[in-house]
Length: 229
Image (cartoon, rainbow, N blue to C red; front, side, top):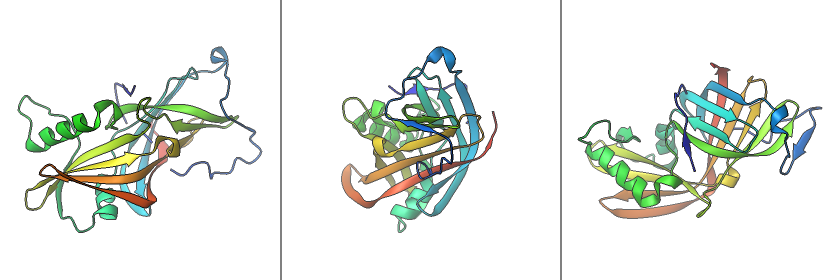
């Protein structure tokens, strides 16, 4: 189950391709002694890229307790760059991805909630939401992580709402492949990077859904610029 990390000052790059040099890597399912491993809690300022398109700067927080409770949370996702890459012909006036802030939700907020419910709220990535990761490798310098799939379904979704320049609303839902979505954390907090692999896009307008499989897949990469906490 995903977990909200509060307070948030902020999940998820170019990973396993990184060179380890002489740093010995332990892979598989590392068995750790929790009593010998201090918990890590870092917040990074960084930038998203969508394939080769530069996205926004934002914050990501990582919580590693070496007991199986490892989380990554992101302040926001690069929705504008995603639209530029996947739906360049759509004229975008506004992008929304949040729950109502008052008792009277906007049409965008209502559609976002409905989209979340239709796809399963426990299967959807949200801003500031801690997403569970599992450790897939350790070295003296680095921790290698992989997003944990939903126990029941295996896949996760990244939904957002687009308001077109004509005022019409469109829900966009990306399918994220957890076992192809990884992260790399420097133990000292010097750097953090993560990659979300998107395999499918669904668009919903006036209740009509269209789905397209992405081949090749799309990569959402977060790369840290500096550690801020």
